[in-house]
Image (cartoon, rainbow, N blue to C red; front, side, top):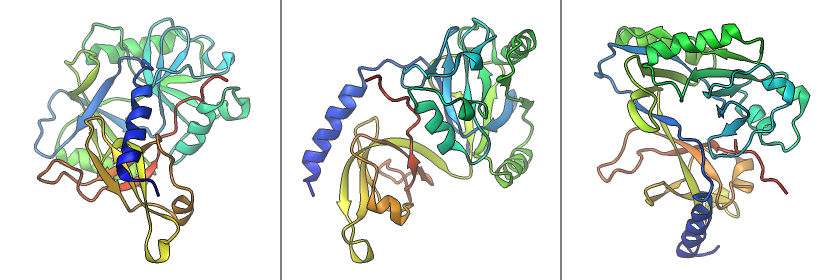
Length: 283
């Protein structure tokens, strides 16, 4: 195995190259915690799909790549920018991810995908008004492949947890809270909060460690790096198949955790999946 220092340098080179790609300026969520005021927030289901930005002409990935959707899929879409999720249904992230990454769209796959819109980046109205604007766009369009994610007023913490339990029981991922008075602003903000039974985040693989005991000759742990440059290991959450063929250097992975340590690193972090929802580069 290569040294951690060498792997870290390789990882930094990879990340530097990625920084050259310019993705759309999207609004990002923080995590909800018990005790936060819920007054003024709208609640919706958090869909486990592929984030997609409609710029009025084509769908763009979070990383700034054009998503090769079939022409018929986006026919009738408005020229207004929209933010949403390409979704196939609960537990089907791998399928929608595979479909989105193809250079040549597979019609059979795209017939199962829907674009679930949850915001309007170009609107200068507060979110409560943007909900009505989204509904108006959907009503005026003859496109059947996009719709607006249902929004309901949030009430109490207990009611929020009850709805979370129902969503999780149905195979969902969690909930989203969006403050009705907030404007669409790029970057992370408490105007949007994600509600889950655990926290999750993404990091880039910069190294591998070899396993011991029954995992000898396989992956022991991934060495991953956050956006702030801090590194840590993910040693749990893998299947035996994933340990035999682990995520490669440069891959973005999603991990779950339960709070942070006193040093600011994720507590009880474990691997969830490779976040391979970016379209492949043109040859």
